[in-house]
Image 1 (cartoon, rainbow, N blue to C red):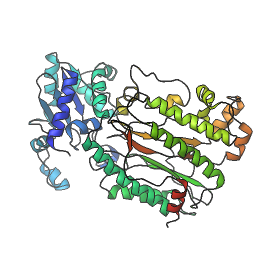
Image 2 (cartoon, rainbow, N blue to C red):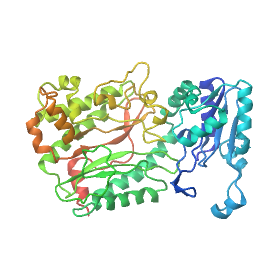
Image 3 (spheres, rainbow, N blue to C red):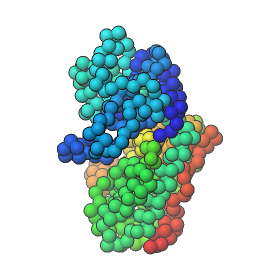
Image 4 (tube, rainbow, N blue to C red):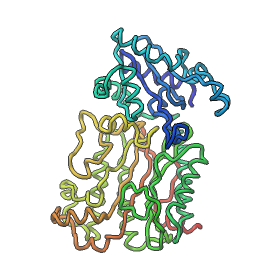
Length: 463
């Protein structure tokens, strides 16, 4: 946790943005894997973590925008808990860590909320994304599940997004810590991978590094020779010479802040000519997009810059044809680049997306496109100082998508379908870094992780 005053100041800032009413933020509960006492690793709700800092399950934090007070409902640990878990701080002691003096046993939550409803108090909540939160809300507010949306406050969503989007120096330092661990995960994966190994062997090493760093992976590790599958979580392939691996993973810092890096490297330690040609196009796009990041730039334009760079590069290999600008305008690039250039990052690896992706990445000045590929862009709006985002262009050869478009004669003016036959088993290439928007430009988070083709090969050969 940070110092108590950090959470006090965060709650005060949110209180001012909302103006009136009661803000209810729910901590996550323990989630059983197969019976009640055998649970998944606990991960706190990020908004609760941001405003209250406590990593305990089952709590409810209340921010009173009218009185200026804060209240914490929580469980008081018993002797039985102490036997199984060791000595635990009291509810009052935990409240003090978050800068809260008013604490109430969870047993009294229902009667307190019922009294507020009777008084006509305005209650603000964010959209629940866990079933147990929906059940709690039904009980506490005495409503049906279909009525929950009437309590979801768009004012609260917008206020939280505005506040959490701009990272403080404390938060950036935590992201840097997560990046340091992530850097080791990626360099070690390059050095340990060799022909004949199974993907799961490297995934185990990567996860161990994240855990040893004091946290956990910030999302399920993507490590696959089938990089054409964008989020490939299957790790059962035996890696052989001639294949490439797409490795997309990140660690969380002890306080929950995330890093998110992707590197693509050859199993043999040496790119083939075909692999290197595609890799260099993606690297050129990534470098151009990072250089374009600055305050006032719309991230949609950064995405379109990547698309044009990819089209131009593929045209040089005679895989595409025609004018790159027109190809991008028509959406032909999305055959090879069907996802967005990146997303916000912070306490969540896709920061705040549980609040609604359009609230985080779009605004009243920025509409979401319906075009295939561009519609997948998670962050399109104007960039501001303090934003931390990923920049992650890629090129993928997805046989099912190629076959569909080819059969439909889609974008025949821009795509050289016969030439793609030599790439059906290619896989994919993605390169990703985390970038801070500064007052005048940008800064790439953390110490460099090899990404120039020659550097990648050298690192892979350090075995």
